[in-house]
Image (cartoon, rainbow, N blue to C red; front, side, top):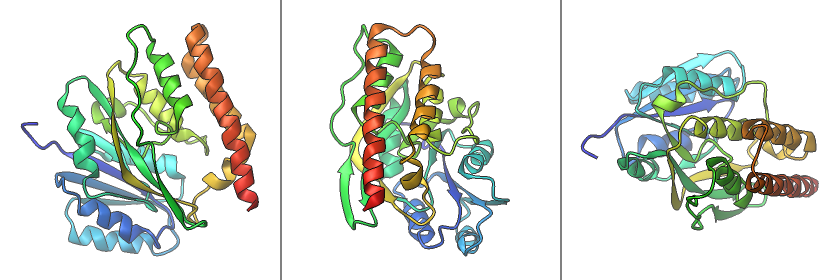
Length: 276
């Protein structure tokens, strides 16, 4: 790249004072420096806002906004409106990123047809004190005869690297017209990613390294409980069918069936983990 484009990082914060310093340190110390760091404090009642304010006073790249508690989706949407960068990334305030997260996710955008960059995740289960690297295996490109939606369904069926909004870098000119569904408290990330991909025929680039560090099981996380309720998965599946459209091809139906099967298994596994 001839220039270093501005990258906006959006961080919704709600009562994560325990984790926020590590999160912010990992962001301000990125190897890629041309950053706009947007912190949306969603009505925290602990020291989160105080911590964020301290960081903002020392780093001019940080924009700190406080709003009444309205939920993570509303906070992210607020951040999207404020972002002025050419690219946008979302980081959860109880997670962190490797030093080269932005640098490596930005590199594929040197190709004109790239519209999304996706990396692997270092997955830490806090309660079990265990960790593993996921979504680092190679994944095939789209076949010439394959519809775009069939390929996206294939990605959803194979593993979970496309589900979350946080291990990705997006083009701001596409994302600015979108928003997270504030009426959903489960799989709103996946719906957002699908809506984003629906806006263009561009290429998805995969970085096969665990650049995003996900802390599963923090005090404010709702994933461990919402994932045990099949109706949440069913709602996500209904949204997926709506996204697919009324006349899917045979191949699209095939991958859609496998996604549903995968989600059934995920729900059962979540219930088992909750009982431990």
